[in-house]
Length: 491
Image 1 (cartoon, rainbow, N blue to C red):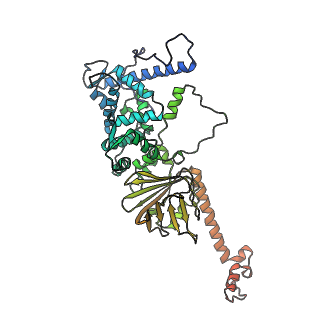
Image 2 (image 1 turned 45 degrees about the vertical axis):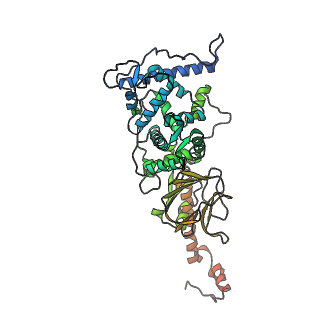
């Protein structure tokens, strides 16, 4: 979380008040020798309780005027700790924490209620429980979610990811279109969505939506830091990625970081030695580590722009020149008529030829005006320039499935489900390590050198120990009926 800021006057009690249920661990109550795992779990719960009490006391200090009810927080005090785009989340969080209690006074929350609700959150390890909790949180405890609930959910999840990633929140006029596209993709023609329908959509379209949300909440609850104390900083590389002349906004990068497989956002790390294992033996801590995955948004900054049709020219030749020989995963964007924006993620380099290519981690995603994952799987792309049997251009669609996109040979049109549309822009980003980009540059230099050498060989064959009589060009001319004789052009 970076350096934590301690509010002036915050209190840390040496002997924290006892919270009901603190020592009621699993299986306690008889005379037995506690196991190491049991002791570790008990210590973990005690540490969580201390952190929650410390956070509660910090919140008490932010109350306006004298606190007329010591040991209690008003609804306004709790919500005001969440500022800017997170204020709505503070309101929802308060309602959800109050729903776990039995009190009839909804305007104040006691220390005991706060700690109990916080510990319930920190006990959530498995994916199913986490999804259910945050579904009801964003649905305001209803059995269904409305379109407005979903819009708030996406906007807040985006803001929390930026906060967790230490990225400064900046409004972008392109971002609301992304959230609207997600709402449309989730609801379709429906006006409400239940938990089962939401789970199905989440698994297919946005599997990591709540990872950063839950991670942020856990950091606040266990780190004893107020939301406003979470440090923010610009990420210059990401700001370059989201320039106005690019297809990518910060919200699009966020959405792709939640959807794409790790091969596109994580660089290959060192291989662990054989037999190496996690030194953490506490199953509670291990489960939490598995769940609280690091925010993947900052890792998008490793993407490198390979091709931009606005800058490099809209043609298959310019595309070939900038994309070929890059042997690593790529993410491509196609913007065309009807405000359509598609993302094509290929888990290996582009290959020209008659055969389809791509592995199991390939994705074809429609980002705008509706968000949906169209196709997943191998053999998704075919790129042909020289084949006589197959139409030239680029076709996108898994083998045996519907062809979704096809780029004509001249890149003047794109066919969307066989309907011709005006193509506006293409971008290709390399997602591999720096070595992939260096290898591509080396290949380009070698090819340029080979071309220059061949040109020189044809113009001055004697410099390479050759003569006109041995030149294959002379033989070809003679086959064509041209009498070239034995003339020397060096006289």
